[in-house]
Image (tube, rainbow, N blue to C red; front, side):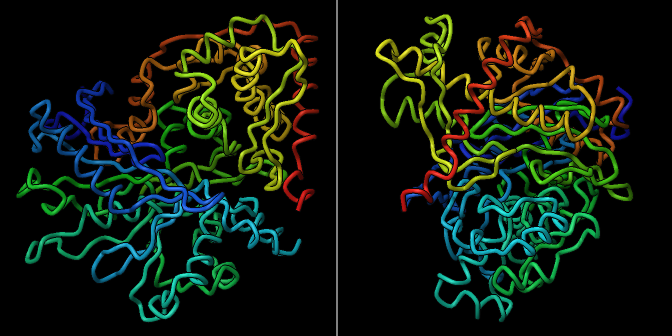
Length: 520
């Protein structure tokens, strides 16, 4: 191995996702040598509301770090650096002086701020799209800040007094990781985020690389002093060191935090999609498709999001096109836990394969609206095409197929926007373990689907960027060689069949749109 930090053996990566927190210790060959996971509890205090306890998220970070290091007797002195990755858009507000949360984290899936978005006029919506690259949606952080300022007693005055601060999950975790014990060298915490996370707030100018004051005023009169400093995703010193307050195992042994990256961007990095046009799809709580767009902001319609992929200290910004599908894997959990019709994911897949086709049954998982490329907050979920012949197996198949149809919507949109055919797609996330799903994706996209040897591409990608920044790896080409193919799926469906199925899907989507507003 030719990395610069020859005495070091590992990088550490912390991933605070929606459903769980994980810490991985990664060696010079890109292998995870130690791993720890804890479930992140979610709360649903009202219809459409989704919250998490910020203190629980932080405690899960502390627990998984300690377990990952101690379970394999990793010497902290052998860790070159650490990287952070996180669920994006989720918003946390806390006290600058005490570090205590002032409200639960409002999760990206939360729809309580939909009325705020609906009240925006067309000119403002166009400004948001042009400035931030995002479609106005409750999904992003800005309207969450406004809701908190409007509904939490005393919060606005505390913000103006410099006491209350707002941040995405990465900023909260970095704050706590760097908050030293009284008298320690790094007692003052680092209040920072990176370009990729800032680009998901809907108040960040992705061209000028700064918080946009007009949008900050629009969404409640946000003080810039209450927002984190925005740094390159890979930076050797912007994010400080993990303090001994995080765990006694770090006492006297500093580990630099050298990267911060939103989870979907981290997965794109972990899939080594370093060239323009490279694309990955993550099948998780939501399905997220990202394509590397190079160093220039992509020109696209409002159907797809323009976002920041990553940035390096002293380097140029790398952009991406993104399609965000807000409910996909959550549909499987609804089938299992919501209506108790089937059990595990394997049972659902087995049921889907007991029938030879969907027999005209489609499912649109618009539990909280539709994301890319439709962007309809009033769409609602539906089954359509039911007959007396329809069985639970057809319903299971329709739910699985819906994940692929939604991803295909985004793939076709990317092809239309870029004018280039996508012939290879790298896939990860829980859904990528399904042979049925991945073969159907290859068929519907008419593209090869490549599954990496490891399913943990998000936490791996965070580790790659941290190691690249700290000098553990020497460059992107060295990291590119660490990617290993696990499985490959090749398209085998005839064009006529593919188009027939897709036309049915588009008709089903059309019927789901606008439902919530039509029955008010």
